Image (tube, rainbow, N blue to C red; front, side, top):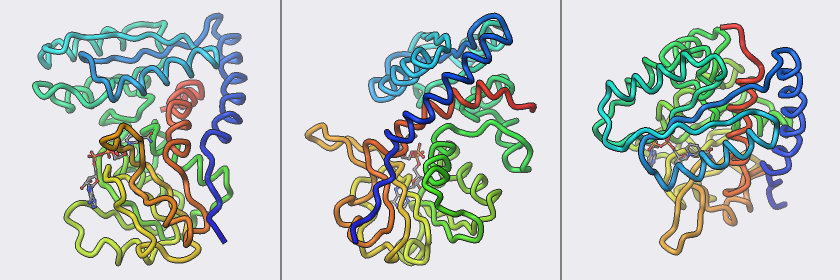
Amino acid sequence: MPARVLDGRAIASVVRAELRALASDYAERHGRPAGLAVICVGAQPASDVYVRQLLREAASIGVRGSLVTLAEDIENAALRAGIEAVNDDDETQGLLVQMPLPPQLEPRVVAEAVNPRKDVDGISMRSAGNLFLRYPSFVPATCAAVVELLDRYDIPLAGQRVTIIGASNTVGKPLAFMLLARDATISVCHIHTRDLAHWTRQADIVIAAAGKAGLVTEQMIRPGATVVDVGINVLPGGAIVGDVAFERVATVAAALSPVPGGVGPLTPLMALRQMLLEPHL
Ligand code: NAD
Protein backbone atom coordinates (compact mmCIF):
# COMPACT_ATOMS: atom_id res chain seq x y z
CA MET A 1 0.00 0.00 0.00
CA PRO A 2 1.49 3.42 -0.89
CA ALA A 3 2.42 5.71 1.98
CA ARG A 4 -0.05 8.11 3.49
CA VAL A 5 1.04 11.65 2.58
CA LEU A 6 1.59 13.95 5.58
CA ASP A 7 0.03 17.03 4.02
CA GLY A 8 1.56 20.13 5.62
CA ARG A 9 -0.56 22.50 3.53
CA ALA A 10 -3.81 20.98 4.78
CA ILE A 11 -2.61 21.09 8.39
CA ALA A 12 -1.39 24.68 7.89
CA SER A 13 -4.85 25.85 6.93
CA VAL A 14 -6.27 24.42 10.18
CA VAL A 15 -3.45 25.94 12.25
CA ARG A 16 -3.83 29.30 10.47
CA ALA A 17 -7.47 29.48 11.54
CA GLU A 18 -6.48 28.72 15.15
CA LEU A 19 -3.81 31.44 15.03
CA ARG A 20 -6.30 34.03 13.73
CA ALA A 21 -8.32 33.46 16.88
CA LEU A 22 -5.20 33.68 19.10
CA ALA A 23 -4.04 36.89 17.35
CA SER A 24 -7.43 38.49 17.75
CA ASP A 25 -7.51 37.54 21.45
CA TYR A 26 -4.07 39.05 21.84
CA ALA A 27 -5.12 42.30 20.15
CA GLU A 28 -8.21 42.53 22.37
CA ARG A 29 -6.24 41.97 25.58
CA HIS A 30 -3.45 44.40 24.73
CA GLY A 31 -5.36 47.00 22.73
CA ARG A 32 -3.06 46.48 19.72
CA PRO A 33 -1.96 43.62 17.48
CA ALA A 34 1.09 41.56 18.36
CA GLY A 35 4.23 42.61 16.48
CA LEU A 36 6.84 40.37 14.86
CA ALA A 37 10.17 41.79 13.64
CA VAL A 38 12.45 39.95 11.24
CA ILE A 39 16.06 41.13 11.04
CA CYS A 40 17.83 40.41 7.75
CA VAL A 41 21.48 41.19 7.12
CA GLY A 42 21.97 42.07 3.45
CA ALA A 43 20.15 40.29 0.65
CA GLN A 44 19.97 36.48 0.90
CA PRO A 45 17.83 35.22 -1.97
CA ALA A 46 17.23 31.71 -0.56
CA SER A 47 16.18 32.79 2.90
CA ASP A 48 14.28 35.84 1.61
CA VAL A 49 11.66 33.41 0.34
CA TYR A 50 11.11 32.32 3.94
CA VAL A 51 11.04 35.91 5.22
CA ARG A 52 8.37 36.82 2.67
CA GLN A 53 6.38 33.72 3.63
CA LEU A 54 6.66 34.62 7.32
CA LEU A 55 5.54 38.23 6.86
CA ARG A 56 2.67 37.11 4.60
CA GLU A 57 1.51 34.60 7.22
CA ALA A 58 1.77 37.26 9.94
CA ALA A 59 -0.46 39.62 7.94
CA SER A 60 -2.92 36.82 7.15
CA ILE A 61 -3.56 36.06 10.84
CA GLY A 62 -3.57 39.66 12.11
CA VAL A 63 -0.02 40.10 13.41
CA ARG A 64 1.91 43.28 12.57
CA GLY A 65 5.07 42.14 10.77
CA SER A 66 8.08 44.36 10.14
CA LEU A 67 11.33 43.82 8.32
CA VAL A 68 14.56 45.36 9.65
CA THR A 69 17.31 45.21 7.03
CA LEU A 70 20.90 45.72 8.18
CA ALA A 71 23.75 46.40 5.74
CA GLU A 72 25.53 43.33 4.36
CA ASP A 73 28.98 44.57 5.50
CA ILE A 74 28.19 45.36 9.17
CA GLU A 75 30.41 44.03 11.97
CA ASN A 76 29.34 42.08 15.08
CA ALA A 77 28.84 45.20 17.21
CA ALA A 78 26.34 46.71 14.75
CA LEU A 79 24.47 43.41 14.54
CA ARG A 80 24.23 43.32 18.33
CA ALA A 81 23.02 46.94 18.39
CA GLY A 82 20.38 46.17 15.72
CA ILE A 83 19.08 43.23 17.77
CA GLU A 84 19.07 45.25 20.98
CA ALA A 85 17.02 48.01 19.33
CA VAL A 86 14.30 45.46 18.56
CA ASN A 87 14.64 43.93 22.05
CA ASP A 88 13.86 47.37 23.49
CA ASP A 89 10.87 48.06 21.22
CA ASP A 90 7.67 47.56 23.25
CA GLU A 91 5.59 47.17 20.09
CA THR A 92 7.52 44.00 19.15
CA GLN A 93 6.77 40.73 20.91
CA GLY A 94 8.65 38.39 18.58
CA LEU A 95 12.08 38.68 16.99
CA LEU A 96 13.70 36.45 14.43
CA VAL A 97 17.14 36.94 12.87
CA GLN A 98 17.34 35.39 9.45
CA MET A 99 20.19 32.94 8.96
CA PRO A 100 22.69 32.34 7.48
CA LEU A 101 24.63 35.50 8.31
CA PRO A 102 27.36 36.94 6.07
CA PRO A 103 30.74 35.32 6.88
CA GLN A 104 32.19 38.23 8.91
CA LEU A 105 29.40 37.88 11.51
CA GLU A 106 29.31 35.34 14.34
CA PRO A 107 26.03 33.43 14.92
CA ARG A 108 26.99 33.46 18.59
CA VAL A 109 26.18 37.20 18.70
CA VAL A 110 22.58 36.36 17.80
CA ALA A 111 22.42 33.55 20.36
CA GLU A 112 23.64 35.97 23.03
CA ALA A 113 21.76 39.13 22.04
CA VAL A 114 18.20 38.05 21.19
CA ASN A 115 15.92 38.71 24.17
CA PRO A 116 14.86 35.21 25.31
CA ARG A 117 11.30 36.50 25.84
CA LYS A 118 11.02 37.46 22.17
CA ASP A 119 12.97 34.51 20.80
CA VAL A 120 10.29 33.00 18.52
CA ASP A 121 12.82 30.86 16.66
CA GLY A 122 14.39 29.42 19.81
CA ILE A 123 17.88 30.50 18.85
CA SER A 124 19.08 32.15 22.07
CA MET A 125 21.31 30.46 24.63
CA ARG A 126 18.55 30.78 27.20
CA SER A 127 16.07 28.96 24.94
CA ALA A 128 18.61 26.23 24.18
CA GLY A 129 19.27 25.81 27.91
CA ASN A 130 15.56 25.68 28.74
CA LEU A 131 14.98 23.04 26.08
CA PHE A 132 17.94 20.98 27.32
CA LEU A 133 16.67 21.16 30.91
CA ARG A 134 13.04 20.48 29.92
CA TYR A 135 11.76 23.84 31.13
CA PRO A 136 9.11 25.73 29.08
CA SER A 137 10.94 27.10 26.08
CA PHE A 138 10.78 28.70 22.71
CA VAL A 139 12.04 26.15 20.17
CA PRO A 140 13.22 26.46 16.57
CA ALA A 141 10.11 26.80 14.38
CA THR A 142 11.21 24.04 11.99
CA CYS A 143 11.42 21.55 14.86
CA ALA A 144 8.01 22.62 16.14
CA ALA A 145 6.67 22.09 12.60
CA VAL A 146 7.97 18.50 12.49
CA VAL A 147 6.37 17.67 15.85
CA GLU A 148 3.12 19.41 14.82
CA LEU A 149 2.90 17.36 11.63
CA LEU A 150 3.40 14.10 13.55
CA ASP A 151 0.91 15.09 16.26
CA ARG A 152 -1.80 16.19 13.82
CA TYR A 153 -1.58 12.80 12.11
CA ASP A 154 -1.71 11.02 15.49
CA ILE A 155 1.67 9.37 14.98
CA PRO A 156 2.76 8.27 18.45
CA LEU A 157 6.14 9.33 19.82
CA ALA A 158 6.42 7.78 23.29
CA GLY A 159 8.57 4.66 23.16
CA GLN A 160 9.14 5.00 19.39
CA ARG A 161 12.59 4.73 17.84
CA VAL A 162 13.38 7.96 15.99
CA THR A 163 16.44 8.44 13.79
CA ILE A 164 17.27 12.05 12.92
CA ILE A 165 19.65 12.68 10.01
CA GLY A 166 21.32 16.02 10.76
CA ALA A 167 22.77 17.45 13.97
CA SER A 168 22.64 21.22 13.43
CA ASN A 169 21.83 23.74 16.17
CA THR A 170 18.69 24.81 14.29
CA VAL A 171 17.16 21.46 13.32
CA GLY A 172 18.73 18.12 14.30
CA LYS A 173 19.90 18.85 17.83
CA PRO A 174 16.87 20.76 19.21
CA LEU A 175 14.55 18.24 17.57
CA ALA A 176 16.37 15.43 19.37
CA PHE A 177 15.71 17.11 22.73
CA MET A 178 12.08 17.87 21.88
CA LEU A 179 11.43 14.24 20.95
CA LEU A 180 13.35 12.96 23.96
CA ALA A 181 11.00 15.08 26.09
CA ARG A 182 8.14 13.20 24.38
CA ASP A 183 9.68 9.89 25.52
CA ALA A 184 10.96 8.73 22.14
CA THR A 185 14.30 6.91 21.80
CA ILE A 186 16.54 9.07 19.66
CA SER A 187 19.51 8.42 17.37
CA VAL A 188 21.16 11.48 15.83
CA CYS A 189 23.18 10.87 12.65
CA HIS A 190 25.42 13.28 10.77
CA ILE A 191 27.98 13.48 8.00
CA HIS A 192 30.49 11.34 9.95
CA THR A 193 27.99 8.60 10.83
CA ARG A 194 29.17 5.23 9.50
CA ASP A 195 26.52 3.08 7.81
CA LEU A 196 23.64 5.56 7.93
CA ALA A 197 21.20 2.87 6.72
CA HIS A 198 21.92 0.78 9.83
CA TRP A 199 20.44 3.60 11.94
CA THR A 200 17.54 4.50 9.67
CA ARG A 201 16.42 0.88 9.13
CA GLN A 202 15.78 0.34 12.82
CA ALA A 203 13.65 3.49 13.19
CA ASP A 204 9.89 3.75 13.51
CA ILE A 205 10.26 7.40 12.45
CA VAL A 206 13.05 8.79 10.24
CA ILE A 207 13.51 12.55 10.09
CA ALA A 208 15.78 13.75 7.28
CA ALA A 209 17.41 17.16 7.77
CA ALA A 210 20.74 16.90 5.99
CA GLY A 211 20.29 19.10 2.92
CA LYS A 212 21.20 16.40 0.38
CA ALA A 213 18.78 15.49 -2.39
CA GLY A 214 18.12 11.76 -2.77
CA LEU A 215 19.96 10.84 0.45
CA VAL A 216 17.19 8.63 1.84
CA THR A 217 16.20 5.68 -0.37
CA GLU A 218 13.71 2.86 0.07
CA GLN A 219 16.42 0.37 1.16
CA MET A 220 17.05 2.58 4.20
CA ILE A 221 13.48 2.47 5.50
CA ARG A 222 11.80 -0.24 7.54
CA PRO A 223 8.46 -1.21 5.95
CA GLY A 224 5.69 0.65 7.77
CA ALA A 225 7.90 3.44 9.13
CA THR A 226 7.04 7.15 9.07
CA VAL A 227 9.40 9.49 7.18
CA VAL A 228 9.49 13.27 7.65
CA ASP A 229 11.53 15.21 5.12
CA VAL A 230 12.88 18.55 6.37
CA GLY A 231 15.45 19.01 3.59
CA ILE A 232 15.16 21.79 1.05
CA ASN A 233 17.39 21.37 -2.01
CA VAL A 234 17.29 23.32 -5.25
CA LEU A 235 18.13 21.13 -8.27
CA PRO A 236 20.09 22.59 -11.20
CA GLY A 237 16.84 23.09 -13.18
CA GLY A 238 15.36 25.07 -10.28
CA ALA A 239 13.05 22.34 -8.89
CA ILE A 240 12.83 22.12 -5.09
CA VAL A 241 13.16 18.66 -3.54
CA GLY A 242 13.79 17.27 -0.07
CA ASP A 243 16.37 14.74 1.14
CA VAL A 244 14.08 11.74 0.54
CA ALA A 245 13.59 9.94 -2.79
CA PHE A 246 9.84 10.46 -2.42
CA GLU A 247 8.37 8.08 -5.02
CA ARG A 248 10.63 5.20 -4.03
CA VAL A 249 10.33 5.63 -0.27
CA ALA A 250 6.54 5.92 -0.65
CA THR A 251 6.49 2.24 -1.69
CA VAL A 252 7.75 1.09 1.76
CA ALA A 253 6.89 3.82 4.29
CA ALA A 254 3.47 3.96 5.97
CA ALA A 255 3.51 7.77 6.05
CA LEU A 256 5.73 10.30 4.33
CA SER A 257 5.90 14.11 4.15
CA PRO A 258 6.47 15.71 0.72
CA VAL A 259 8.75 18.60 -0.24
CA PRO A 260 7.38 21.08 -0.94
CA GLY A 261 4.14 20.88 1.02
CA GLY A 262 5.22 19.03 4.18
CA VAL A 263 7.13 20.69 7.02
CA GLY A 264 7.67 23.97 5.10
CA PRO A 265 4.13 25.43 5.23
CA LEU A 266 3.95 24.87 8.99
CA THR A 267 7.29 26.46 9.89
CA PRO A 268 6.35 30.18 9.85
CA LEU A 269 3.08 29.40 11.63
CA MET A 270 4.99 27.76 14.48
CA ALA A 271 7.10 30.91 15.01
CA LEU A 272 3.90 32.98 15.12
CA ARG A 273 2.15 30.58 17.47
CA GLN A 274 5.02 30.66 19.94
CA MET A 275 4.81 34.44 19.98
CA LEU A 276 1.05 34.51 20.53
CA LEU A 277 1.10 31.91 23.28
CA GLU A 278 3.45 34.14 25.32
CA PRO A 279 5.08 31.31 27.25
CA HIS A 280 6.00 32.08 30.84
CA LEU A 281 9.75 31.77 30.69
P1 NAD B 1 23.12 22.27 8.21
O1 NAD B 1 23.92 22.26 6.94
O2 NAD B 1 23.43 23.25 9.27
O3 NAD B 1 23.25 20.81 8.88
C1 NAD B 1 23.14 19.65 8.11
C2 NAD B 1 23.36 18.44 9.02
O4 NAD B 1 23.19 17.27 8.21
C3 NAD B 1 24.75 18.35 9.62
O5 NAD B 1 24.67 17.85 10.94
C4 NAD B 1 25.49 17.35 8.72
O6 NAD B 1 26.49 16.63 9.41
C5 NAD B 1 24.35 16.45 8.30
N1 NAD B 1 24.58 15.86 6.98
C6 NAD B 1 24.86 16.50 5.82
N2 NAD B 1 25.02 15.62 4.81
C7 NAD B 1 24.85 14.39 5.36
C8 NAD B 1 24.92 13.08 4.83
N3 NAD B 1 25.21 12.86 3.56
N4 NAD B 1 24.67 12.04 5.66
C9 NAD B 1 24.39 12.25 6.97
N5 NAD B 1 24.31 13.49 7.53
C10 NAD B 1 24.54 14.53 6.73
O7 NAD B 1 21.61 22.35 7.74
P2 NAD B 1 20.28 22.74 8.59
O8 NAD B 1 20.18 24.19 8.76
O9 NAD B 1 20.17 21.82 9.76
O10 NAD B 1 19.17 22.33 7.52
C11 NAD B 1 19.05 20.98 7.08
C12 NAD B 1 18.12 20.94 5.89
O11 NAD B 1 16.84 21.37 6.31
C13 NAD B 1 18.53 21.88 4.74
O12 NAD B 1 18.15 21.27 3.52
C14 NAD B 1 17.68 23.11 4.98
O13 NAD B 1 17.43 23.82 3.79
C15 NAD B 1 16.42 22.48 5.51
N6 NAD B 1 15.60 23.37 6.36
C16 NAD B 1 14.26 23.31 6.19
C17 NAD B 1 13.43 24.09 6.96
C18 NAD B 1 11.93 23.98 6.78
O14 NAD B 1 11.18 24.75 7.36
N7 NAD B 1 11.43 23.00 6.05
C19 NAD B 1 13.98 24.96 7.90
C20 NAD B 1 15.36 24.97 8.10
C21 NAD B 1 16.17 24.15 7.31
